[in-house]
Length: 95
Image 1 (tube, rainbow, N blue to C red):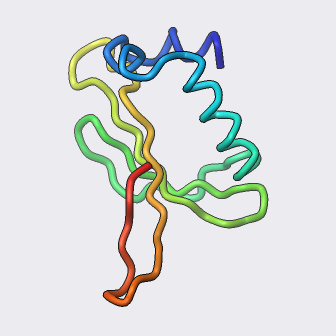
Image 2 (cartoon, rainbow, N blue to C red):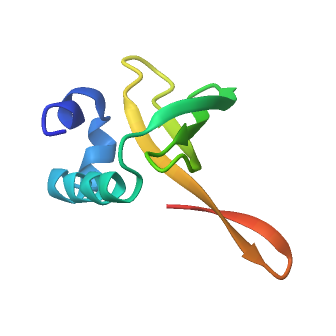
């Protein structure tokens, strides 16, 4: 991850959240989900890709990858949409 982040992450994104915090978030995600595999593409739009990834326990989770609109099209953010049950039905929230 220490090689991946500066190579593929947009500088403005790295300025908002530093390397150490990103490494810690990656470790937490890995502990929670294990190895992730592509299950399906949900939506593709300019600068954004939403996919379902399958975790090691076969649970499926929605991830949103946002990239720069202009070259070099580096990664800006990765969001996770988790669905929680509420009295109004199901609603998503972004991590």
